[in-house]
View 1 (cartoon, rainbow, N blue to C red):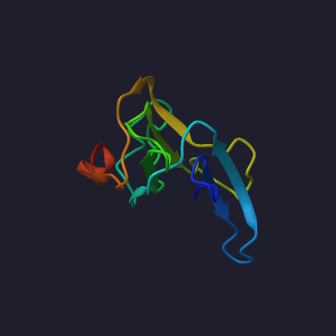
View 2 (view 1 turned 45 degrees about the vertical axis):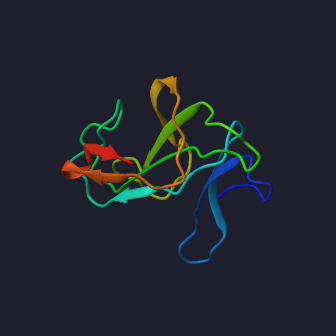
View 3 (view 1 turned 120 degrees about the vertical axis):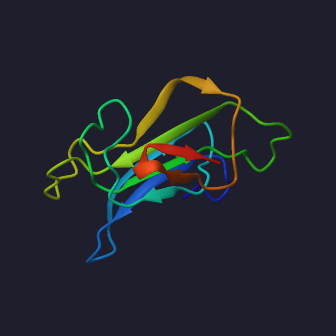
Length: 120
């Protein structure tokens, strides 16, 4: 979700039983685009995700409401760790790649190839 003014992205997880906020992390540089979900991937196909078959979420940033051109873009992924036991210590999304890209989107990605490939 994004701030009301659409300039900051927030990734949040709610408690499934109470609806309370369980975890949140923000990205101050740009709002988030919709996320894509791949259920039970072959693994987390990114550095640090090896052998992780938990569902994976992937998204990018989108333009701010008053932007007149495409700004710098970043892609992110989130996967609960292997053996997750409900402890939120150490949770966080992962930035995919070190390079900033000239890419933003307003669509969610499509994940294929057992979660190893994605495209917009």
